[in-house]
Length: 548
Image 1 (cartoon, helix red, strand yellow):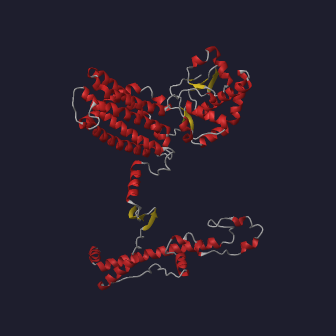
Image 2: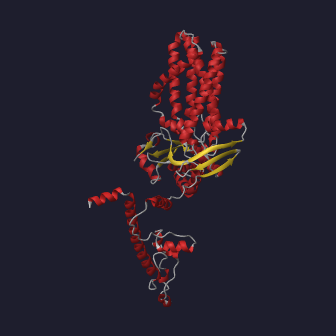
Image 3: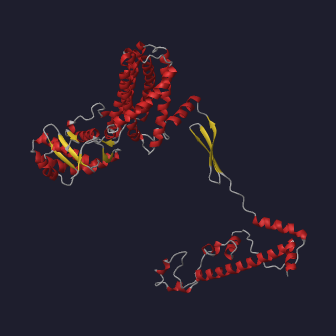
């Protein structure tokens, strides 16, 4: 027996014959199983007692009681209805479909008994098997050409899921290609549709502001070193300016650490104040050679002011960028904005080195050029902030919204309201909006004995209103939102309008004003949100809030 097995193993022809016979038997078993499935499926689909089947549903059940003649006939069906048989390509149903469609189907191999195979026919058997098992050719990659604005690209989507893009032709002028390349590197993707209105104006003045600031920084550093008795080269002044700037930040962070809430409420004002402080510190450094005996005092005060300015500018950067993020692209905006700042800082440093070597090599030259650069710097940052459409509610923006609504019944968008903001005195009281002051300490607004009485006027609201002779105080609860602040502000504004027109007693005025506010608040807040305002929070800076 062992010797016979060894002979079979050592004889490739006999081994191949045995495998082919085994394959034929398996095909025969498969054919029998598929025939059983085919017959059972035929019986199920033709069964007249059924009012439907799992493939086509049972809608016939409703009409079966009225039309019983249908139950006596065999049901007709299409070959395509054989869901189970057609799941196998070798089943009788698959052969029928292939035959009806004019396609020849190779059935399973018949059983065969191979006693001996000629060695010369082994190659033919392998060729036949190779033809049967040949896989279909791989699908060709999908490719197309897109032409947009004089630029043609070839796109190819490979079967493995990779998309490759190749530039075929670019008929744009060289100047236009340079401009668009600049936009791709320094402006967010999808510009101008991916940013809010005013971003281009903001970016232009931001670039000029950084250029003038960097130029002035080089001149001030050179003046400091002159005052200390050194005669540095412009390159040395540039290197030292970075060292001093890094050292200043530590002191500025400690001083500005408690001012973050105020910066959230009025980021524009604090951004302008930061640049005024920066130019103040730079000015002290520029004039330091005029009084070298006070070098330490002037340099220390200048660095202190510049350190606060650096931290304040960085703290207000995020809310300003957020106002331009129209499509949730804050990271892209931030990255491109910093790229523009870096580029124009480098250009400004180059211009500063040139001026320090020529016009501003003396203190007199710096006293002429320095103030001019500072004026350009402050003007640019002011125009930047005017172009920024901040869409969060703070006391000033809320007062402007309410005043315009009472006057004209219209609500401005953040882009329309930006030029109405007072960037120098944001805390001023606006009479047209009810002369409301927000966030004064509760003990200064209401006497402790009258607190319950004042709160009962609007028991379900998250604000307290107390009318005075010159203004109306509004204090918010700790968890009050922007909508709560708007409700309270509208009550105060309506009360001032009613009192001015009809001279009614204070108690009745507040109740009538509250009723007016309740009737119009729903369409008011819907339109406000549709204009792009965020009403989920109210940024009142360090204003006091209460919790009862």
